[in-house]
Image (cartoon, rainbow, N blue to C red; front, side, top):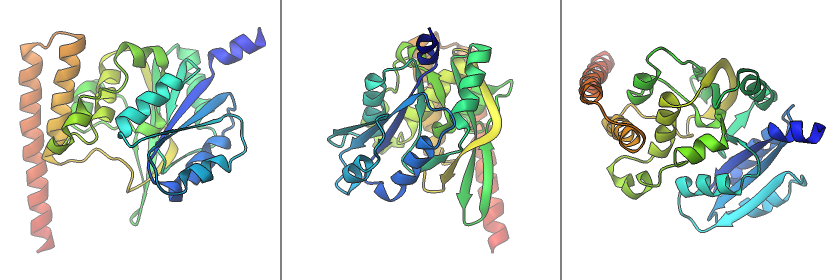
Length: 273
């Protein structure tokens, strides 16, 4: 009985990587140092030609599962990891991010207590300018915040039920086919939009992870914001009707957002002269 209760909240951690052995060891160490120990760590090596395999094999922990595939991109790597996952809870960590020691423990406890589909937290960004915390907030306009790039759902803080991912098509490979149009980050944005629209979730305001400035980030560029709009409309098209009001609202919000962005760039340019 104890085993059944324990395994019900077991976590499969998905870690995709490609030629990141320089950072990967710290990511793995942060997982192995978790206060919550009921998990498996699935490392998906997406065709690395550095010493990633040897470095991962150097960790003597039975909870680590290493899988190598030819280079197909982050979307495919994450989806393969999810399909390999044994447990009903899924967590993500990128190969250059680091978790705080109590990260999994706090989020699993919240999900269990509130019977949630997903949970994420704030994350600390480390750069030459110091440490800045972002994310960890769900506002009344969570969906629009995500679509317009105002809301942040850091990938390496997400813990989510596998059944939710399977119901909403995990990560949509549609975006990997159109990277040249600015959709490099859209599989992440696609998931964030699904989280903002469906299921029950919670945001831990405390920072439970760290990432460097080179990690994936949602850009404020016009390409990134256009990609968010496309992702939102695609999700609504596949899982719910797109109302005319939603299209108009997103269009207006997008235009106003871009005007503010352009104005901000103009101010920055003037102040630098």
